[in-house]
Image 1 (cartoon, one colour):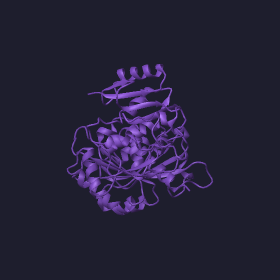
Image 2 (cartoon, rainbow, N blue to C red):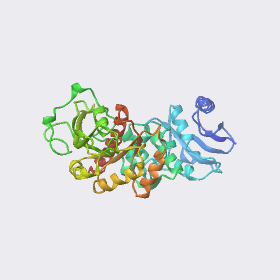
Image 3 (cartoon, helix red, strand yellow):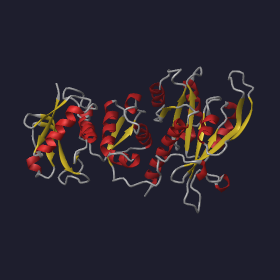
Length: 399
């Protein structure tokens, strides 16, 4: 049974455009039909008409249409559809309406204010995250603090309707909880989408200070990030994949015959990369062997983010995860963290969803990504989740 999109008081040209979009779109999760008369699931009305003329008991939801960039004075927190109509915005709106006989979760998400805030209670499923490339970064923001569709739109530089769709999907799968409405978000100084630039723009290592915080007297900011994980997981490789300078490594011959690796890090790895906005990342890799765990505490001091790398081909990667969560437990109370899992194609279990459940059992919500340490784009994606979390904390700390 198709859902019904009703229209009231709209120009005929808009009605026909709605029919075309509904008929041709391949991204709608439910079958829809457009009607100008019968009871409907969602009613689009002219936002310029008096409120009394826009109410109807025959619609489950009433959405005013307004000029792009405007709000509806009678109900500023309610959902609107901007005109001229964009197909992707209409599809995102319709995809938030659940069939009347289904669970009310998605339907309730439809009427949330764009300033209603939500927090993750576990990392989202891969099915949800793979729907849109931006969803991983939006989830990273939600993993650190409560966010609204409006604030996610600012953080992710993406349309608020897409952010509302994402929150609706998370509510459907039971991955978030709602809280109070938030203040209007302000633009943040850190651009999480910034990508590493060419080595010609690199800053010299000599100009960096000893902490992870911005340098004094310069317009550029430094961010100290730490890579950790078992021996042979690819920490040195990951830093080398992205560093714009030749990485510094403290490796010696490997005496551990249980790992087929010629050398192993005994001190630290170091590399650096400059973002498009001039900010600089200083990347440190810890030794993997637990007998060097005293170096973990030294290297994580003053860091702004931690990346845990796991190898799914190892005998017990879940135990590896537990070891590093325990080893960095103190730092994780305050520090953004993301987990990258390698060799998933050849060793598909545990899945990323399995890791998410293990983290949730510990009360942790951490970004989880499939990563090949040899691939620059994969390492950049992991770092971007950390930068998103750092930006959220920066926003929360603002007066």
